[in-house]
Length: 422
Image (cartoon, rainbow, N blue to C red):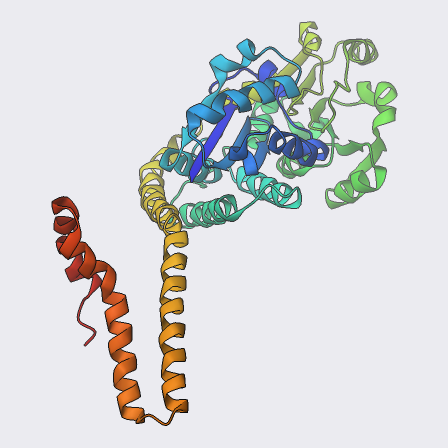
């Protein structure tokens, strides 16, 4: 069985391409069904990981990487209505131990834009749950994900990979502090109510801004988050009228289209009389139209901008990378040993079945002799001889009649096959 991973991430593809290849959460199950219906037996097991920084497809296959790469690549391009030639230069692929190592590294935060960030582990767990619900997980991918989560936990607890605040949320705060003298005078608007917005709320709340407001499509969820930070909630539909009232805007929703456009920001800036407006777009696809950055008093940062800024703060974590890699290497070897042993399971099952057939045959013969009144000790003696002869028949015949090469191989194996039972 081959384990295969194909995908793009922030190192291989620009934001514009990543947002085109993103899978909305509500479409993951349908996408997995579509992927498995390609007619390629290799894709009986499949899962999709789609985050701000990566889109990856994991599968277990009886075919080689060469045989499945093109069908998956074509499906991915077709699904997102784009030309395959635009995708191919940015696509990476891994198989077997390299695929396992990649999964371990991703979950441990070693492949993240922010080294050691913890959110990716939760995102991978969600991807595994979605794949299982869609029927995409079998023996191999289920075991891969479970081992991946275990390795990520070990890396986080045994190394300093998660120390120091170098998250995107922390980077957003530091960038805002470059624009405003103090955050205590500023009004913060958080658009969305997901995990990333919650992290941003936590970081900005620590600086006691004048106010925190959460805008969300579902008002109840927005209110629940706002209450935690003594803020208020509003509906997304109120954004056009309210946008100019805020100094700092952080947006991260699951919308497939921008929700803050050029015209909305233009009206807000007239209302603000050109007071600075700090905006961070953490969504993929983007929530804020890129043209907004053309206004002189608007400071718009994207996910990639924050990633580059935060990278400078990662030096403390770099020392933990070697320790993390050592843990991962050991765990990759153990997992691949499990994969290799899985390949012998059908053979072991067949051997047990053959042995059981022989046992049942000799046992039935012994019962017939006992029923005839034969001496039990003689019946037991005959039973043991019969079992021994039948189990040794194959190796004995091969030694007597097999080719020279077969006999030599068997001679090497016999000491291991028939070790002393004492």
